[in-house]
Structures are given as C-alpha cells and as structure tokens.
Image (cartoon, rainbow, N blue to C red; front, side):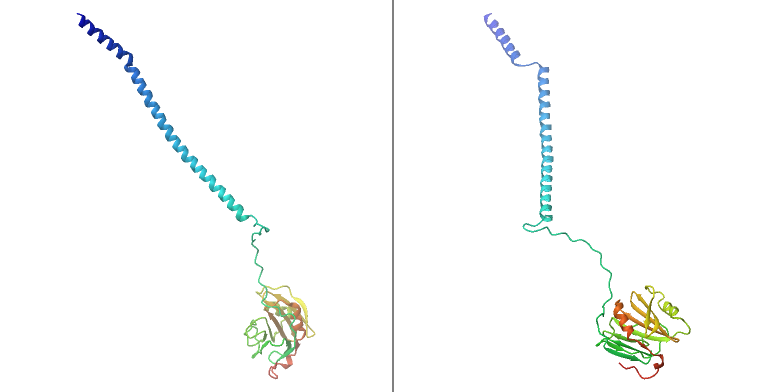
Amino acid sequence: MTRRYDLERNLVELFESEGRFRAPDRVLRSALDATAAVAQRRSWLRRTSRVANVYLSAAAAFVAIAVVAVALALYVGGPSVGGPATPSPTLQSTPAASPSATPGGLALTESFTSSVNGLTVRYPTGWDVQPATKAWTGSLVSQESAFADVIAITHSDNPFIALASLRLAGATLDEWSSTYLSGHTCSAPEPLTVDGRDGRLVSCEEGLYAFATVDDRGYLTWLYGSDDVQWFTQVIATLELDPEEIGGASPSP
C-alpha cells in the first residue's frame, strides 16, 4: 500500500514538474512563428543594407570622378603659374585673294614698238616681250594670243601687259568696250586720256583695262594680275598710238 502510494505521488510530481517547464502547444506555435518572422526581417534588413551600400558606393565614386574632372578643367583652362593666361584661338574669316603681284614702283625704262598693232609703249627693265605676229580679229585677248603684244615679268607669268588693236567697223568707243567686257565683273568705266585721245578705264576681277580709239581703230591695253591703277596709268601715259605704222617695219624692242 505504501509503495503504490509512493509511486502515484512520484508520477504526479513528475507530471506537475513537466507542466511547469513545458508551455502549451499554441504558445509554442506562436513562439515559433514569431521567431521565423524575426529571422525574415533580419534577412530583409541584411539585403536592404547590402543594396544601400552598393548605391552609396556608386554615389561616392561619381562624386570623386566629378571632383577630379573639375580639378583637371581648372588646371588645364586656368592661367599657368607665374604667367598670364594664354587666350584661346578664335576663328577668323579668310580674306579674299588679292592680285598676284603689284608692279607699282617699277620704272618704265624700256621701250617697245609694234608694227602689227601700230603703237609704242614703255615697260620695266627685265620684263619679257612677246610681239604680236598677226592682226586681231576681235576674239578675247589672252597671254598666248598671237595678235597681242604681251610684256610680262617672265614668259608665261603674271602680271603682264597685253596690247592689241583692231578695226571697229563703225562701233563707238563705249559700244566696243561694253561689248568686249560683256560677261565680266567690272566697275563702271571712268574717263581716261590715251595719247591725247578720249579713252575709258575699267577695273575688273582679272585686272585693269584701257580702251581708246583713233579714227576707226580701237586700242586695248590690259594689265592682268594687278589692280595698281596708279602704275597702270603711268604705263598708259607712255602709249603712242599710230595706226599708220601698221604693216611697216617689224616690231623692235
């Protein structure tokens, strides 16, 4: 009887002791759920922290690059140590091309007479003379024209002076000069005296022209490659127009 009583009492005490240390099942489930939630929050916080660290690192790198770029710009663009700042180059428009040479100041020390064109003119020493070999029939004058007397700095070079004459067949001075320069870009004709006769001076893109007439013959003098009007008028002042000499003696420098 005593042993059984003791056994029952021991069992009761055992169950009572377990009841004190073991919580009910719903409490345990609540505790487990709470623990899982805490673990998940900690995991989310760790991931959020890693993402934030990445963005912060990128922002710091961007700021560092910007600081270096500003410092380089200030160093390169700023004034050098011990001296004034060097101004940056500015674009300037290219000036228009001017005539290739200006013969102004060259003395007219030599004389040339043309029996083909009936004229005499003075020119600078050392210039090359290419006398005309046939009559002019009205085509445009060039440096290679056989009907023009060409006086150049050197053969086939410019500036040069070309002189020629032809019969006008009744055309007036203004009619002939305007027809010849048709299609050229020129200034308005100006009055000019050539060997005591009425003439015209015209400035064009390619040079200066002088026109004059004697009876029914027109005389053209062309300075190519220069716009030196003063020197050109000095050349014109030496011109002697004599149509009666045409077909006479051969040209002589």
